[in-house]
Image 1 (cartoon, protein in one colour):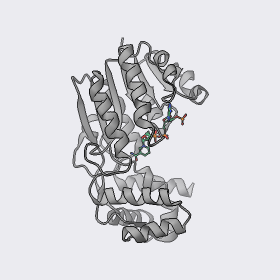
Image 2 (spheres, helix red, strand yellow):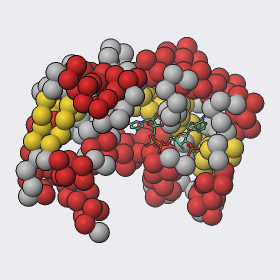
Image 3 (tube, helix red, strand yellow):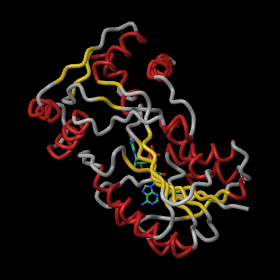
Image 4 (tube, helix red, strand yellow):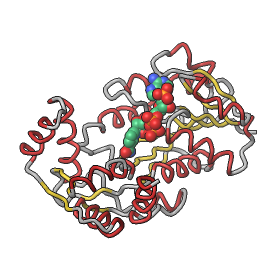
Length: 288
Ligand SMILES: NC(=O)c1ccc[n+]([C@@H]2O[C@H](COP(=O)([O-])OP(=O)(O)OC[C@H]3O[C@@H](n4cnc5c(N)ncnc54)[C@H](OP(=O)(O)O)[C@@H]3O)[C@@H](O)[C@H]2O)c1
């Protein structure tokens, strides 16, 4: 019997990964959902999953959360800047508790990426390499939801604003990344493994034309110089630090940091959902 643990199981990716494990026939009793708010995982407990309290910021909560676990999916946390220390606490507890593999959700091209979120992932990958626990690194590109959740705004304004130039994003649905994460947890990989995960790459011009085709309403991409984009973001209410963060993300997209031509996502999990199909579903959601 192998016991699988998934952290972040109250979040979008972790919850879907737990469901995928169950769908693939893993007995619910062999699945541990490690969460900081057990009450938010009641649906998983109802299905027979072991729900345990574990908070990345409370090292004392982690040994019991990971007791008896063989393979761990460590879903990256949501507090940028604190995550290396948080993840290191989980990795340390996992190593001490005898976990035999850790699967970690990193970022595309983590080793070299200029994305402002990349240092946390680079740091975590380094901790993993030093931990002695065999690791599977899932270098995820962007969630397509980063764009579908702005569909109403794109349709209202008729434009997508940014400073990403002709940079491309290998976006895919969060659910597609989650399926791959569950598959990586189940795979009998040896040693350290790195997967670059993403869907078919699109530029923001291509994003705009796909949205136009799917919705029948013209949406164009307006590429701005970074300083102008920064000013626009501040004018619409973002504080300076947040606006700089958004502009830095576009600079890293322009540099190709979120683009991959790897087909690891399809190989590991399932064929990524095409962008037009993703937006058709998002449009139906707006209409309902
Ligand atoms: N590639 C992308 O485009 C993209 C976009 C967004 C996020 N991400 C990264 O991918 C991760 C998973 O994505 P997601 O969509 O599932 O994010 P999400 O829905 O925000 O879920 C994050 C999960 O992490 C848990 N968590 C955060 N801090 C924790 C802590 N200190 N201790 C224990 N659990 C903690 C959250 O618990 P609570 O429910 O208690 O908050 C939640 O279950 C994110 O956390 C982030 O690192 C990637």
